[in-house]
Image 1 (spheres, one colour):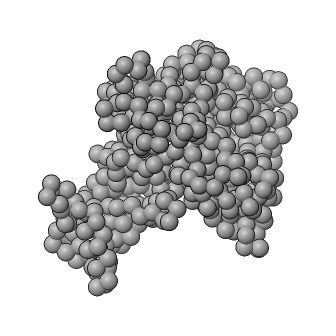
Image 2 (cartoon, helix red, strand yellow):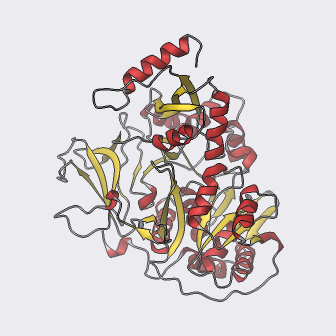
Image 3 (spheres, rainbow, N blue to C red):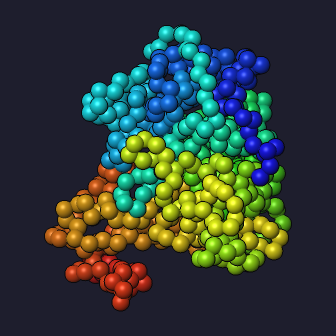
Length: 515
């Protein structure tokens, strides 16, 4: 890691965006159905939001504003006020959304003037005010000196205890990654970037700020379009989108729709794939359908913002690498004794970087690196370190390959989910005596659905179980099927659930009509 690879000390993304606005005030910053929003207008909206948050420097502020220019003004306004972001969409958040707000305890909740059950619940519970960002007068906020180590946002990942894990990240990390992302992928004036990633997924922040920092045009995907591959394909063409970031499983659906003949063709300049392993057949299909499109694989956990990247060439069939470290990160492949693995030997991917999260959100509101995932590597120098739990290897050419997980964590539709968290939720239903959740992958290795094997206390109630899971996870899509297991879950000699026997038993039970 070299000093040249890091963002300038003291730089924060909201300051970089303001500098852009001052340099080119009439440039389009956000393209929306109601018309283009200039950099000057976006800055003015952010200023009045920041002015409405006096005294909240250093505090978390929740943003639940519908898609559109005011959503991005709210993000900038919170940072300009010296506060840090907790960003989520405005759909049903379920019990998980309540758990997150309860753990973070935001000092304010920003809304867009529409009904929001989660925001109303939090306001009633705590007395914290709801602030409608669409009904504020113009105002000039106080200026805040935000140090690089101050928090910019808190993201959340799935936790094995059933409690979502808060992952704060600093201004230095967000600025460094956003400026690298913008420079490496050619974002700049005139480039149109789709903002597709859902707010609950932290890459949404990176694609947003990278676009605004670079002076490119941010094009939010309408909610009615975002999860429908066919509609999105038509929207990408109609909006002349240059850059899209999405998950491989959704990219596969876009490819399928584009080859159907009734929809627009993929005509992006650059497609960034993240959040899941990238299958080779998908790469070959994308290159064949859009030979002029640049294809990139991005890898990395929330705890490090990201870790590696790889521009996928058109003449390299076979496993798709996750590539080389992003500037500011060092990635090692270590065995169980913390020794570096020889080339082509599978080990754990471990990241050293100044951009490792300050730690998981503790009860006191501080970051805590006491978790084993942050344990240092003896003899390899100071950290911070993050042990990803991902398995990988280093090829002879130096490129890294992802080889799965060493625990029960999976990626499904771009969301990082602990199977144990899903199990904990199911066990909370009165009709469930025992349960185990397994992930099912397609031929390409991508997890496509979850199967819950349930020992019921009374009459099986799959519809109630599904509703119970949805109540916890809200609008996060968890494709699930349920299999009823009589009596008890099969276990091996160590007392652990025997996954192989469970799958066989579940198929047998389902065949008898009990699933």
